[in-house]
Image 1 (cartoon, rainbow, N blue to C red):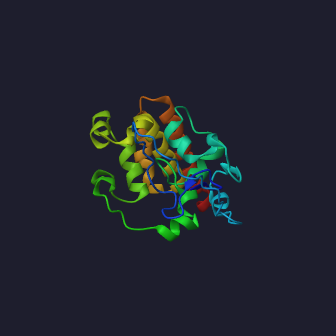
Image 2 (cartoon, rainbow, N blue to C red; image 1 turned 120 degrees about the horizontal axis):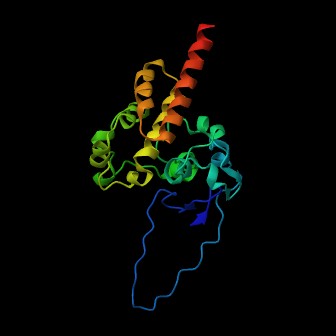
Image 3 (cartoon, helix red, strand yellow; image 1 turned 180 degrees about the vertical axis):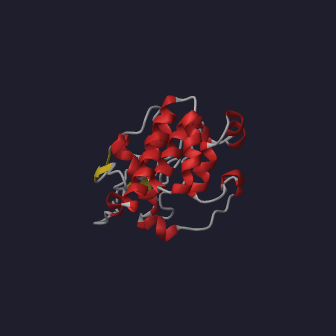
Length: 208
């Protein structure tokens, strides 16, 4: 394959949604010829679609602005200027891949049941965010047992959930957010306060 403008590896028969594995052998194998074609052409869908402007130019990614980095790898607070761009995403982002014509062309139903969403995380994005924000440590451990989502830690997922609810700006979420002001983690509380202020400011604007 070739590296697309979103910096992801694109295979001409699979798109970019695939796993890469390694096979260790004691055999001498003749390597394949390198894939030298660039089949992105003039397309800029991935650059245009990135909500936080993380793809600063073709094949140049500012990882510190990438939603996947912000919601999974970042251990501290999410910068204020990037929170709105995160939208309702609680864990990771595939927007630059979702819009890629190569993935649209090769999209197909999920064949492996092991990759299906867990029933405990069913529902729309807002429902999942509310559920995460209310989780105890035990519920977190049980819900995400043997899941890569544990990588973000409970405090990280609650931080992300608060941002998602703040971006939804729905008055019905205020009771859950206000209850979360009692969270033991200062970082979580900071993001909850931001979400509450964002919702209340919209309510004041609508009332005025």
